[in-house]
Image (cartoon, rainbow over all chains, first blue to last red; front, top):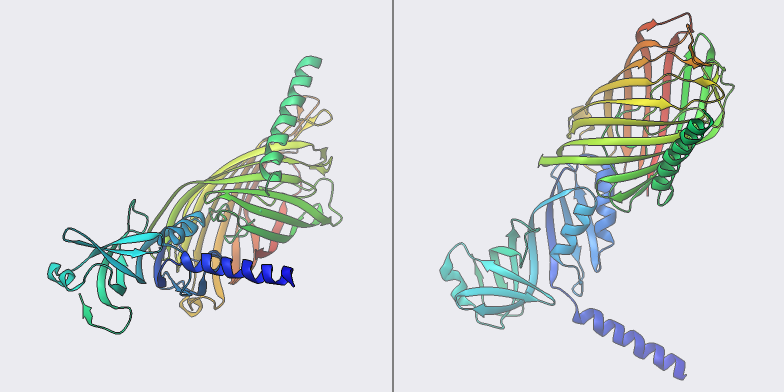
Length: 171
Length: 287
């Protein structure tokens, strides 16, 4: 009985730890250069599927893309996706990302904080960033032009909306 | 003389040990390129592959059939190690001529090789330019080749090329050197390879649909005369040029390639048998 209780307690702790490290990625469409054959696509699919919390990987050779879906508690980060593709011998390019997190402000600049990661938010029209307050929970759709760049990825915002019921705005 | 022989043997053993160590530590593939020519595709880091080949050469000596297995492993994104071993061999004529081997090896050879892709550039979706070096070492297990017992050998090759979703080309060349064995020594073999490939629009469906491509391959070989007791053998060495078609089918983790090379010209130094054809089929699985 005690053993069973300890087992359940252990599993609960592991679950809580995993949830605590969720990194906010919901969907990524990753462009990949240098992928020209079926075994390349197979290799990309295998590698991405092994990342934590990945629920779907669809690879298109003709478009040179990988569509990656994530569970809400996925701990996978953009640098991890970049690294596994580089290790496979490919050249990752821009990524269209849907990610959820909370807004943080540094002066006039907005950041998106997601678990252990953060993104610099870039708006086509600077005025669009003023609609969002610090700590607002949001879902952002945007493009990262260079996922391999050092530092926080710069997310060019295409659409941003409140994570829960609330206002929606686009950029 | 004895000392120089000892140093030579130690050198040969060191070369072979180096090759085996490089591949043996974490061995992997003939790959998803052409059947005979050198090509650049390299396994990703941590990726394994298995290539099972059936090879047949026919010449005036008769017909040789060999079954071989090649296991490859991606040590890094641009570095692949391979180990190629014989599975079975038909009744190979003792005076069968040599051929350029690439990664797969030939006959009874146990061959270890490393493929290092030292340059790559991917300018757009589905396209890449890359260049690689191939180093290998083998032990022929005392097989008779061109009438001489053979032991160990080493080779080096370089290849550069382009792959895309519609066309492919690679140009390469290399040298195979054979160490002396029982007073005999096979002459060095120099070779150049060229391949052009095409994927017809009908086969340009997206993954995971089957992916077929066709190649035209050419292999030119120049072999030095063999030596026995320090004397050059008259019926050995010469120039050969082969060309022929091959086809590669890829289905997710599976691949199959088949090809045949036919002699275009053979300018031999003596009266040794000429080649009639070389044929090869390879079944690949990527883990």
